[in-house]
Each structure stands twice: as C-alpha cells, then as structure tokens.
Length: 302
Ligand SMILES: [Zn+2]
Image (tube, rainbow, N blue to C red; front, side, top):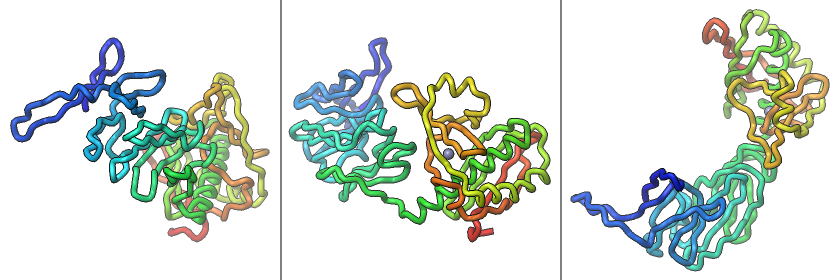
C-alpha cells in the first residue's frame, strides 16, 4: 500500500507486485479514505484505522487493512489502532465491529498485536500512566509490563533530575536543559546549556540536591493554559522538549513545593524523601557552554 500527497489529502493506492517481473497489479478493493478524523476502507464492512501511511494486507481474511502489519493479530482476525488522543480500538476484520477498549487519555502508541494481547506504550500522565502496557483485546483490561521496582527507580531518578535542574537553573542564571536520559541501571544524565560553566560549582551541587531529598518536599502537579506557560520565564525548562498540551490547550506543571515549578508530563514521586540519595558521577564538557552531568542513585553502579 502506498500513500501519495494530493491537494485533497493523502490518497492510498493498493496492489500486488509480481515477483520477479515487478509488475504492479492494483486492487480496487483496497481503497482508504479519510472519514472524520479517522481513515477507513472503502470496501464494506468499513474498517477504520490509523493513517496516513499505515496499511497492510490481511492474508487469512483476504482484506486490506488501514494499519501497519505489526498491529494485526497473529491469526489475522483482529487488529488494533490508536487515535491521536489515546483511545485504543480493536477491530474484528470479518465484521468490522470496532470496539474502543481504552478511553481518551494519551497519546499512546500500539506497538504490537501479540498472541497474548496488544502491547502499547504511553509516554504521558493519565490512566494507566507512562510505561509499557498489555491490553487484553477481549476484556479490555490493561496490565503493566514493566515491574514495580523498575517504575519506582525511574520515579526517583526523574524527580531527582528535577531537583538537579532546579538548582542548576538557580545557580547559573537560568541555564536550560538540552537533553535528559534515564538509564535502567539507576543512573541518569542531563545536558545543560550553562553560559558561565564552572565544573567545580556544578559538582558542589551534590550536597544541596541531597538536602532537598532529605527535606521530603511535596511534589504535586496542576495544569495551566499553554500561552500562560510560555509567558512565565522558567516554566518551560527544556530547550527542545515540552509535554504535549491537553485537548483543552493546557500544559501540565510539576511543582516541587518550595523549590521549583516546570512543565513536565512524566511520572514523579509524591515527595522527594522517598528517593535514595544521589551522587554526581561525572561532568563532561560538551562544548564551551555545554555540560553533561551524570548522576546515580545510591547503590547504582559507579
Ligand atoms: Zn518531570
């Protein structure tokens, strides 16, 4: 299935390539059109799906589907797709019956339709929460794939990156974050654009970070209109990434009470005191203004 951009929108063409002559035989039963906000087949029963760009042929049922091959069940009888704002649909190919198994929270992405169910990934807050999930296509129940110990560790690391970020922002005249990465071994790195970079002064933040952890500051969140968020200096802390706004144009603000407020869509602790202490492992120069700081939770590899 190929998609071509036209003045009327993206148009799908379907067919089969003959091997080895590369002869293309088009298949008129494979049409896909935009219907409202979703794409659907032109052949009945209508099959809805994601797109543009997605498409595959369901060999067991002999039908074109408006989804990628990985979103089709192993026996070809069903497929799954997600909409921009997080609903996950499961469709019975033979009847076209389209069930919404997860509501409008997201966005999230259907990763794979396996024998045991539909794997999807959610990056942002809102039930069920960030992480990897398995959806039962019959009952609609959702279970976490990532284990609770791992999730707790990521919450600790993520909350600690906020503390580090807040202290760098304060100590270095509003220095911004250019990148962040959390690792499975309990370490994280943050890249900062620090015009007056001083590595000793950065290294000396370890004590103050652990003070903030010990003070057990409350962490809470609220939502503000996107335009207001951009008007308040310091609320959008990352130079490159900001969380997606909600359907009504608001952005999530995470506050460490008494320390920091910044836009973020991730998962945090309820209070800083439930994090282990951290160490600053390394500071690397990544350019005249750019510093990469590596931190690790106590007990993580050196
Ligand atoms: Zn965050």
